[in-house]
Length: 178
Image 1 (spheres, rainbow, N blue to C red):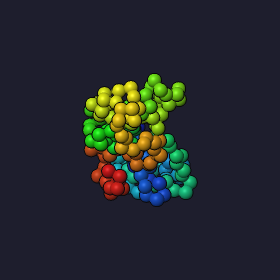
Image 2: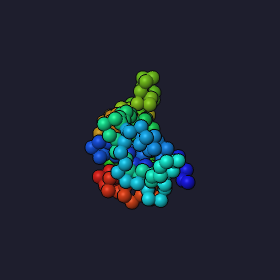
Image 3: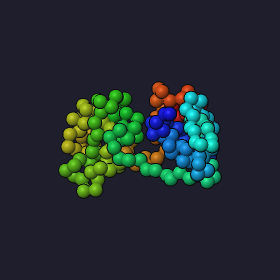
Image 4: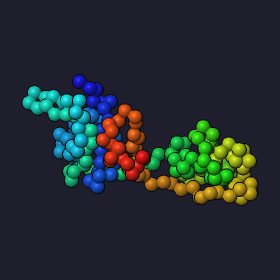
């Protein structure tokens, strides 16, 4: 039998929008509690009990009994890069993550204590632009920001990562998000 903790199940909301990828154990719990309905199954992963045999869900949709709490976007380096589209906010060029840094719009020396890790004070910058700006504001460095930094709102599709070994049937549910 497959390790249910490692099997990935796509979870959709009532509007058929992807909201999460859960493991097989959580999928069975949602099914047993009546919180979700099965839309697609893994044909090769049977779940057996004394009285019942069924295939493990592959894609599930929350029904009226199932609710999903809204999440927030965690402040992190990858999420700042994601928010800014991997684009340096000063020279407007796109870079791979390895060539990017985080820049404090208002330098650490000028900041208030609560602005250190703030969505509204951190932007993506390439290494040359960050070095050019140094410990100055964009105005002092005579550099213009592409756009003002902001705290992004959480989108369900942010949590969905389609991996090469995920079922092909997921693509039809994720086509607008990949």
